[in-house]
Image (cartoon, rainbow, N blue to C red; front, side, top):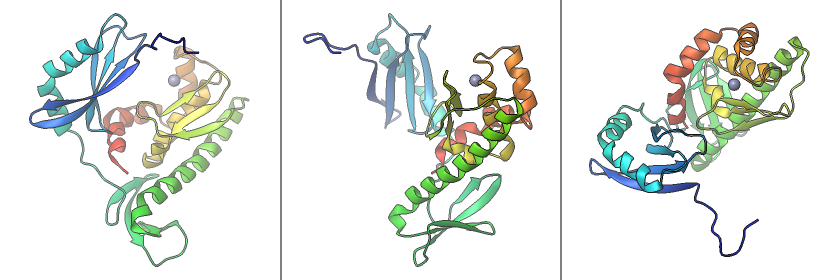
Length: 241
Ligand SMILES: [Zn+2]
């Protein structure tokens, strides 16, 4: 509850900074467990994020970002190019590379023909329609995998949520609810398989200890390959759609 006359502390603040003649969105975010100022690039917004530890101010964070502006520019220039969901673009989908084709005259919503991803309806709704369809497809895929892997270790998962998270591919709550990024639909099958294995293993071990990792390795088709893929390619998925 808010106490009148007392302001809630600011948790985050959106700024823009001018670097190399362009204006870059900068999110300044307090984090109670951060131990130092951390500057990161946000591939989704083409911006930067500064995480601020307790005892340090928004102004300190802003100052740090300004000092590092050359680094920010270099990182932003090095990001993979954006691939919007539109006619003629190629997008990864469950291990395939598909060409998006807008079919304005067709009925139905989204379907696959060979290596073509056909999207019906009006052009201005194409991206939204395709995203919704991908979310439904990934939910089916993930639900089946969760059920299969949880059964292997005699566990039951709670509710499954599909989200658009920026920093995590999956997460698990104490109550056994599992959340996943819809963008997993764009990863190769063994990556989605690993992320599901990881979260299902949390139904048994909430930590990241040795017993947890050994269970993930049992449940996943290719844990090492998937981790390697995520480290190398994971960020590119935030540039698509
Ligand atoms: Zn974990």
